[in-house]
Amino acid sequence: MRIQGRFNHIRLVAALALLPVVATGCLVAAAGAGAGAAIHLSDRGAESVVTGSVDQAYAATQQAFRDMGITEGKSSSEHDGDVETRELEGSTTDRDITVTIKSEGTGAHVEVVARKSAVTWDKDMAKQILEKIVAGV
Image 1: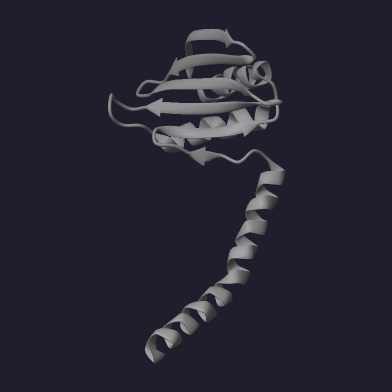
Image 2 (image 1 turned 90 degrees about the vertical axis):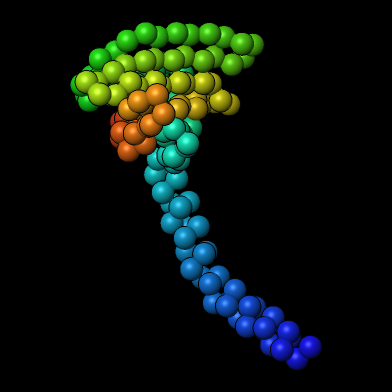
């Protein structure tokens, strides 16, 4: 019983010692989020919520494609009630890019997928494209 109590005391002290580190990390993350949209890596690419409209995000996507030498391909648009979804496909010599933009609240959710093959994705490239889109909105 005495050993278990001492172990709990050590865990409590360790948790309290880490508290300033965790709090600082949260503050840094919050500061970064205030400076721009947070970009998250997904299973196949990168995604973010931007404060601009679907149209603004779509225009920023087209500009990002031009800036990065991505050839614009097929596009689509659909409405389901209050939700608007637009998709733009593009390609480079060795990547197929798909950007999906969906209205979300007062902004838009943007997801970028850069596909190398049927089963592999380039998350770094997807993130680079998304960073340009976010900067352009």
